[in-house]
Amino acid sequence: MLNLDHLIIGFDKGLRTLLSKAQTVRAYPDEDVAETSLSETEKKHAIGLMRINHSGEICAQALYQGQALTARDPLVQKKLEQAAWEETEHLAWTSRRVQELGGHLSVLNPLWYTGSLALGAFAGLLGDKWNLGFLAETERQVGGHLQEHLQELPAQDAKSRAIVQQMYTDEIGHSDMALEMGGAELPAPVKLTMQLTSKLLTRTAYWV
Ligand SMILES: [Fe+2]
Ligand SMILES: [Fe+2]
Image (cartoon, rainbow, N blue to C red; front, side, top):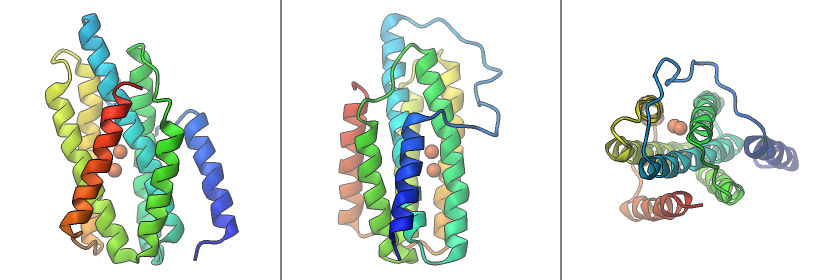
């Protein structure tokens, strides 16, 4: 059950997610990829897309954390924590890339974080079957967005592409993991609501 200790830990992790530099154990996927020159328009577009991906990872942090707070099965909790670590790496990769391109991170990140934390905790309270189902669907939708970004990113921006490609592989892995652990198929209206919510994020984070 959710108690005050959990809330304090959640708040503390939230502040760290928003304010401190994310760490990565794996090498940056674009480590060995050379920087290429981009026009101002291409650069602006790449910044917008990578800023969306960074905000998406802020949400992932909060969702996983919210879910881990309320998940019942210790094995589910452990798996959620493992996946959350990979999301921290995504956070580090996207954050560095946005800055390399000369952009800033979304000013609305605290808002995305708070909303996603509440959503994650709520999903966790519904029980592990729905919690994992929600996770699988989220990761599947994120995978879809990443595929779109691979189409949309400037062709010569190989550094951003390398990052997005590795993230896509990881997100599909997270989705499969959640399904293998017993995630249920969500009702269509829930999936649709999730799609609309993520549209709100992608439309806003591209600009601010
Ligand atoms: Fe991620
Ligand atoms: Fe993921």
